[in-house]
Length: 257
Image (cartoon, rainbow, N blue to C red; front, side, top):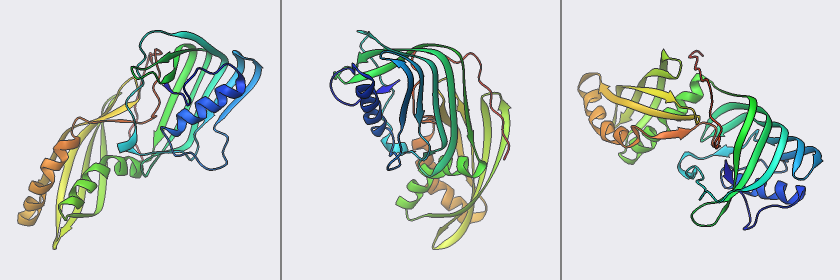
C-alpha cells in the first residue's frame, strides 16, 4: 500500500504510527502540526479503528514514487475493524481533490521491496468504498500542468483556459480545453484528449491533440504538440496511495462542475 519509515517492521502501536507517518512523508508534504495517523481501541496488532488524515497534504506529480512492489516474503502485520483514509482536500500539485476511503475488517501484511525497504500492504477488506471528487477547475489544472510547464520551456505562456467535459462511459471522460497562449503575440489553441480512471485510482491521459485557430494558432500548436506527446499516456495517481491486493468491484465516474 505504501512505504514505511525506518528499516524494521513496527512491533508496537507507537512504532506503527511513527513508521506510517514517515512513509507518508515520502509521498506528501504534510501540514505542520497535524496528526496524520490515528489509532483508536484495541491492542497491537488488532485495532478497532485506524484513520489516516491527509487533509491539506500535498503530492507533487513529478515526485510521486512508483507503486510499492513487495518481494512476496510477507509477514503478518496489523488489522483494523474500521479503516479510514480521508483528505478534504488532498492536493496533487495545485489541484485539490476530496478523498474518502472507508473499509471494514482491513488486514495488513509487512513486506520489503527489492531494495529492502519495509512496506505495508493491504491484503483484504470487506464492505469498503472509495470516493474521489475534484472540481472542474482543479481537473483543468491537473491536466494542463504538464502542458504549461512544457510550453514555458519554449517561451510560450498559457494565459487562460476553458474546459468542457463529455462523459464517454463510467470510467472515461473526454475533455476539450480552449486555451489562450502568448509568445510575442496572442493565439488560441484547442487541446483535446481523454481521461480514464482505473481500479487503482490512477488517471491516464490519452488521445491528446492540439490544433490552432489562424496562422498564429497553428504556429503555437506545432510548438505544443510534441510537448503534449510527452505526457500522452501518462498516469497520474489521484489518491497517491495503492490499494494493494484489494480490488474495486465497481467504479463509476460522473462529469459535471
